[in-house]
Amino acid sequence: MKAGQLEARILILVTLALVAFGLVMVFSATSAAAAIGDGDPGYYLKRQGIYALAGLALMIGLSRLDFRRLREVAPALVILSLVLCLAVLVFAEPVNGARRWLTFGPATFQPSELAKLTVGIWAAAYLARRKPPRTLGELARPFGLLVGLFCLLLLAEPDLGTTLSLLVLLAAVLLVSGVPLRTLAAGGALVALGTLLAIWLEPYRRARFLSFVDPWSDADGTGFQTVQAMISLGSGGLLGNGLGESVGKVNYLPEAHTDMIFAIVGEELGLVGVAAVIGAYALFAFTGLRVALACRDPFGKRLAVGVTALVCGQAAINLSAVLGLAPLTGIPLPFVSYGGSNLIVQLTAVGILLNIAAGGVRARSAVSDRGRRDGGSRTARARDRGRATRAGRRGDVRRLAPSLRGTARSRGGV
Image (cartoon, rainbow, N blue to C red; front, side, top):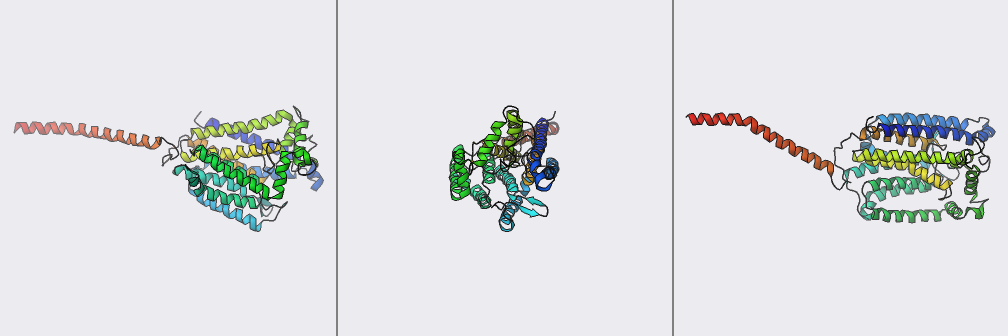
């Protein structure tokens, strides 16, 4: 089996399994409510199926497109994402007090999902050609300025969960690029301070944070969603109550089909189902990092880490919120939760990772890896050129030797 084929097959199997599992759980979580609402129990399932097909088509297309081309269009993708994030604040209609979706006929699109992927592509392309930032001042330009602008636009929607997942992705790319831990720690401290400030200045975020500290103090108010998630998870036991037998999804657990779908998994499939889902994301993370380690292209290595962090970092944030280990952020569970924009972008990212797995192992970049301290690629090429030059000189001497001997004989005869 060629290098990268095993990793690619594992990624495909894990991704398809999670998407199929998500379709089943979306139908289980929404069929009763959809039947009561408009009489069609499969309404959400049909829409999620369409999004899944569109995302799989993009995944296949990106898996066949050379990932190095993304480096050339990275600036254009960043500009497009900025324009879309601005457009959503101007033209989008508020839904539950938030402006996050642009409407195109029957379809809706969330620009913040695209912004996460484009920032990852741009960061990987930038760090593949330049030395990693060594100080906080170097980190602030251009990463702090650009990512700070994106974070301000996302917080204005407001969307704190997407902001956090974008920062996790960027931190992973910076770490693998060789940024010193003390610099990352200083940047992380500033981000944590800004996050706390954003939470405290927004009343609903402040209420969510305080309910996370002690959800049972207001179990019928701000802590209702967290408490109901705990009840659903706990009532599933070891094997669960059976697929489709959840009680929490019927007027008890808000947003059961989106950011709280993992609680339904725990109630219906028990600890076994919960462990299987967590294991699937762990296998995805392990395989994605193996792809990054095997990739010889500096851009591909960083991009593989960014894509892995995009999927698994978002999963970790969602699982932590449902399990009561972190405040609620409203971020969906990748491949499983209902939501078209997130599913399509995540599958697109997997397509890029598959192409890196297939071609990145054999890739030889045109530029040296600036993030490496040994500069191995440039030294190896210089050594090869030196050997070729010496070999060429020896060949020239051999070719000239007969003529020189002939000249010497002719002079001796005279």
